[in-house]
Image 1 (cartoon, helix red, strand yellow):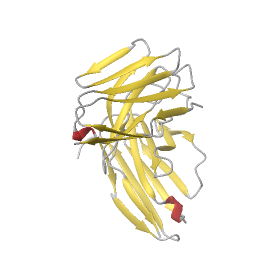
Image 2 (tube, helix red, strand yellow):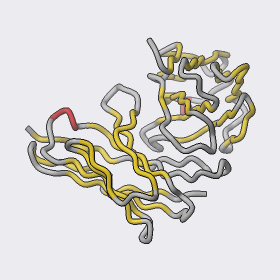
Image 3 (cartoon, helix red, strand yellow):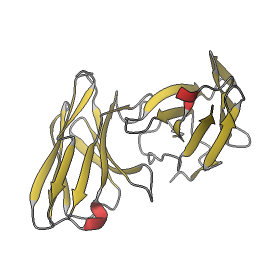
Image 4 (tube, one colour):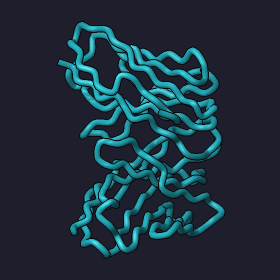
Length: 113
Length: 114
């Protein structure tokens, strides 16, 4: 099965600064790399994803970068705002139907006003 | 509420009770999932159903019993639970297991076992 690790487990940044969260995985067959955001008391929701044929994807203030050789991908949030405070999960996945779905252990991001 | 719904949103039960959690998705998906979310293990996959067939059981104790009568509905039957089973139980759906893509989560059921 997939071993998924996220770093750091907690992160505090000043409002306006950038935040980076890294996800490492073990299964080289993984080809889909999503990031989910879970605000306090709410459900996890997809915020950005990338497929293995792309190295970087950007959507306004958030971006995801992928290094398939090193088996890690990262979430980048620029110009952070208080509403970015949440727990972020990665969940790398392969397209073969028999892989175990594994979420990372989560990163609690706190934006300091 | 559209997307994925769950009932009840909160449940308190004794260790000898029998209760059921319900999940319904209105997205036309064929895969449905149960997750347990607790402080110790943030998002722990329990069961996966694909086209109503159970494809994954992640060593979940038999006191949790899933049921998927059709692709839109998923139940989790609970009996003789332990206090350590207290957690947020999340249901999710996706297009199809084996087809990578977004999982859509329900709001969860906050379960407390006394």
